[in-house]
Length: 226
Image 1 (cartoon, rainbow, N blue to C red):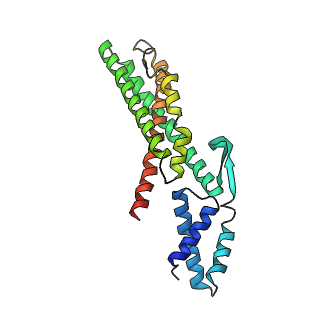
Image 2: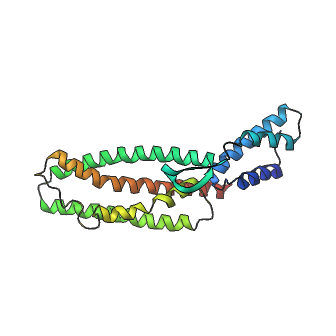
């Protein structure tokens, strides 16, 4: 039995009342719950209100307000289904950041260890500074746009929570000055690799944070097409 527009709106309103304000998760649950209600209405001779209540009781645990201090901060609270998605994505993101930093550091160490010309070395320094400056400016734009966006998503929430670290790395790792000033081809490859790995981490971290902005606006675009 196909649900009416009013019935779907009632499901959505109930999800919002339970704290589900992030559009990506809300759309997923709306689809699951609506499909489950339609299936039960087709197979069981019960009214919409009875099935509606029964299905939401089934999802009650997923809609309980929860938190994860280790991954999302002690003060952020949301329905359990939101917390679980954010934590799962955060763990996956950490793996990708570390793996990418290893590759970045290895490639950069190879380049640094084989540079013979000071001019080439200076050009590489300038290139790294320019690349990270672009990441910083893109982060500023992303933070501004998501902060003022009327549509909330879990990806946007993560970006607002972690994006500011991009600026910290900019100064902490001296990327705004000379990121490679301690490296040369006279150092051992291991020394250069470890040093380049430390430089690579803020690059890969910044890049994967910006991917959150892309994911956020994919959802925004999808909603505008509906």
